[in-house]
Amino acid sequence: MLWATVLYADSERDEIHQHLLKAYAILKADGDISITRHLFVETVDMCVYGNTLPFRVRVVNSINENFDYFYVKKIDANRLYGLELEHILSPNRINYFIHGDTIVEEHIVGIPAEAFLAEDMPLTRFDQVRLAKEFVKFNERCFISLLGDMHSGNFVIELTRDFEKWHFRIHPIDFDQQSHHWRKEVYLPQFYPQNVPFVAVTTQSLAPENVVQYQTEERSLIATRVKVSHGRFNELMSIMREDIISSDDYVRRLGAQLAQHYDDAKFEHCDTMGELVYQSIMSLLGNAGPATSPLTAL
Figure 1 (cartoon, rainbow, N blue to C red):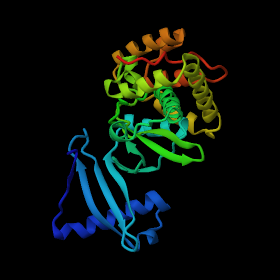
Figure 2 (figure 1 turned 135 degrees about the vertical axis):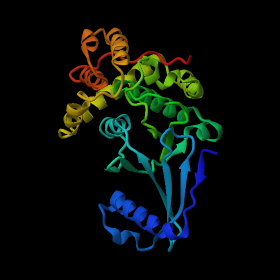
Figure 3 (figure 1 turned 90 degrees about the vertical axis):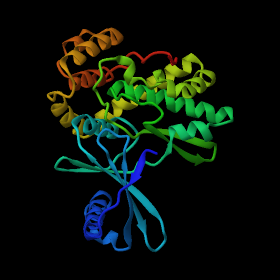
């Protein structure tokens, strides 16, 4: 069990729950506390597996029994940069707010990838192609933004029904390894053993030229998202490029690998992980740049 229910003394519970509902109102309604009139906190769970022991709060509507979750965690720079980059560079949107050294995040809806692999892998070729296409794009986004540790325990699959069967979208849910490690493969979900079934369905469903096509499409989409970010990307980079979020040795070693991958010596002159991310994204503007690599598992 990854989650354990937290019990509070009667003298503390009401006050804690009241403040949690206020946090939920800030997250969902810009602080309009009236939305919590019929809400109550049913449970507070703590993840005993996570490095920072995050809390998961279950909020229930007393009228219709509908429920929602949100999370309370200790903030760190890597996680914050990961959330911002995901919001700017991907089709996914994430709401959160920070108070002091605490971050409150909304629940990211989707089927945990581990459960999806066990119970929901598509059976028809049409759906397999759609899933493979999304995994290629997800793999590309992670590499470009240097989001690491994306094994099947750290992302979810969102399914949307349309008039031609299913549409799949992959959402990362853990950003602790944003721009931290020195090894290039850490930022490629295709190389994690837990993701072998996704790689297998991709190699079986897509021709190599289709893989390159979808990689190129995603790189172009990321470039477009940067251009229409209304300055948010530039503001983020102005801070991230100066911040020390990994060791100098890791930056130097990763920079050498990226310089070889992109055939661009600029990466070798980067002094921070933020500069590596910036250079990676700048390589997209004006040209497609090289794709990651053919999808193969370790």
